[in-house]
Length: 90
Image (tube, helix red, strand yellow):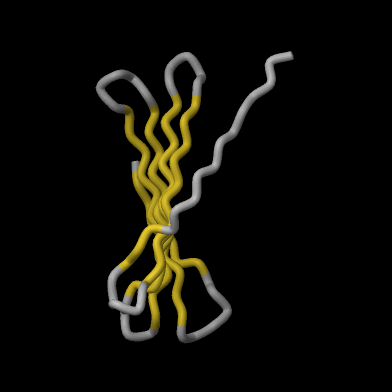
């Protein structure tokens, strides 16, 4: 299953496009890939935000997010940030 949607940005010079894909991998995990792209009025990609969530049949979840922005060299560069979520079972 997949879908796309245009997200109004409120500014005519910038458009947000979102693509979401869902699938089940060979191990039975549900994999959800959500990609949001910021595009200028000339069609140039300015930034991307991709979130991939994997949910196991046992209910465990792993989420990975990658944010990239356009650099002065004209290429997309990943924003390096590590976020660790911990669950306290107490």
